Image (cartoon, rainbow, N blue to C red; front, top):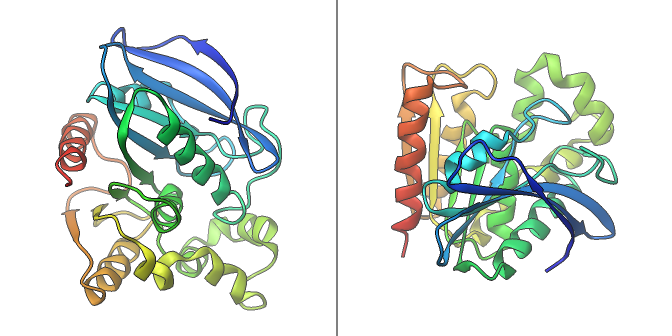
Length: 256
């Protein structure tokens, strides 16, 4: 395990232990949060890949404790450059290594019973797909997830300045940099079953991302399931959110 430092963190759930972890991602020291059920025994692992960038969409302790309370050992990287971590995010570029190294960390955890699932929300969706391509994930779940970086640039005019800065130009001058961040053309390397969750009123990450992912997986005859919700956008109501978290955790655990 590449854990350099572990500090106990106050937990909002009395049944879940939280630990702030510093780990190695390549040569960089990166931060993340580990959530473990206090119950004894071994559990499936789950890599939680956040959305946003920098402080937008940052990992919330209550959120990963919610997943851990479903009987999972959860690790959520903050990504490089955040909360005292070294380096800088580049929006599903080299910072994908932060997810890969976090997957390895979970696999090596003594309480993880072999299987590690991958979950990605929003920008984390593209990170989750890449992790499933590069690592032996038991399953991959994307919720409101990005699948196509060029589509994100086209749809989110408010993000274009940031994307040009961290990616290094627009897709009209450097399309290869956006293609390199888009996993759709590498899905033949993915082994894990996929669950796609998306609100059809989503304006942050349009449902077209889900449709393109679903279409690509169907073309490959890859095992995939879709849960589309006509009435919701990027953020679901709290009671619905809790129900879907329980359902998707059960879906993960039932994977062979």
